[in-house]
Length: 255
Image (tube, rainbow, N blue to C red; front, side):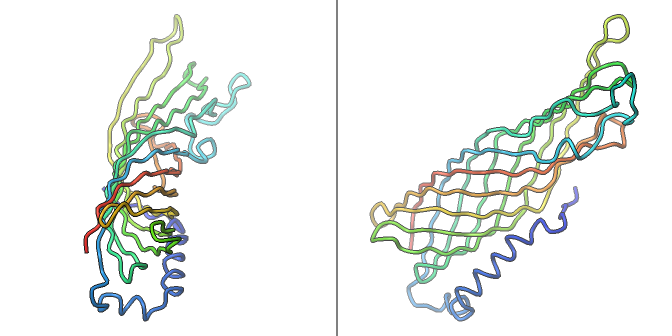
């Protein structure tokens, strides 16, 4: 399994991480660990709702030969499922310095997202479907900052870089044509890994001295997906995978 790192996919969060570090100041970043009694940690559980977007599918990849047969171009997509909703669960471990600067790790697991493509394929006298379940595990390193709004409420912003591992379960179907052919179904499973990045904005409320409750929005880029147009074929269907995540978090804080 090879990690794919699309050109430019990580430039946006990397630039934000550099900008955030420059804004906070190198003195703050380098001296934070030496501040007496200031560091504290939060372990948080996240419950996440996700709106997943499979972008550019009709323009990336091909089924058949592309030739025009009886007025129909072979392999052109009839339809593609480009938006799906799902859910995820996650854990965050954050370490705060001077009550403002945050570094941390985050991991979350996504329930399957559906990627369904239909094309007319007159070259084989039928309609072809490729249906893929995409299940993911994501691990990200985070850098963030928070601003107190009052005694209990805080505004938080963060950027993150890491890895997303996809488990792809694909069913390829050539529909039956009466008197000519029966329906053909083939299945394939594989794993893939991509560089991933995220941007976050949220609020957090203190519930006493140790508990916190948070609401946040996270934009997650999980890289590119690729499946073969049919088993044994050299042609591939490609898509980008982007998520808009809305998370409710419950945290336990320890100094």
